[in-house]
Length: 113
Length: 116
Image 1: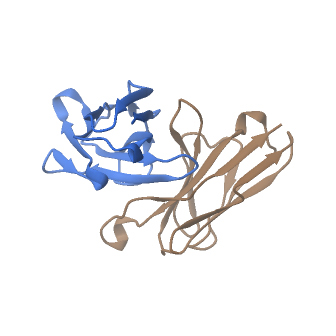
Image 2 (image 1 turned 90 degrees about the vertical axis):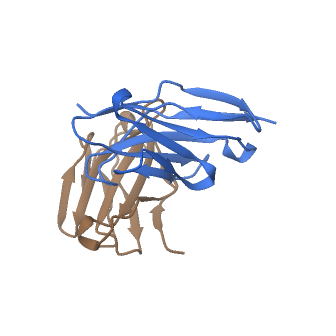
């Protein structure tokens, strides 16, 4: 069965520090992988996606993610976190692209000034 | 502004009542979907539609009905509300591969529903 695991429910970092949010997936075929961000009271916004090709993908707001097939992982990174990055982050896998997504439970990021 | 519009933003119902959550998009997207978001569980797909007149079940369809009479609208109906349906509901739309390069899902701002 397809599934997505985000091991960290809450993460707190200091502003300016680096960030890595973990995502592991279980999927039988080559997955389409996504990271979304949700600010309080808002819908989800797509940060980046992986469909194929280069395993290091760049997204909006300075985020990047690396697809590692051997580890079934798609971790999100940012070299220097800003206070405005405080939000909830969701990893998702889609069998057919953007549609019918399966989401992880989310990681809530807090940023200390 | 173009996007996905959900109404209402908040709603409180009593057990057994019915209601319809509205979703409209003005991007001519073929694909629309409904998710519910519960604490610690991420978003789960309820129903989806790949075009007008075509709908299918997602991961958690029980207790919900949908229809798709136009490309723009995709309402979600609760026929007899239950406390277990207390959640935040998100509608999303995207283009299908048949429309060219698939575009990411645009999400509405959500409907916060409480069932007493």
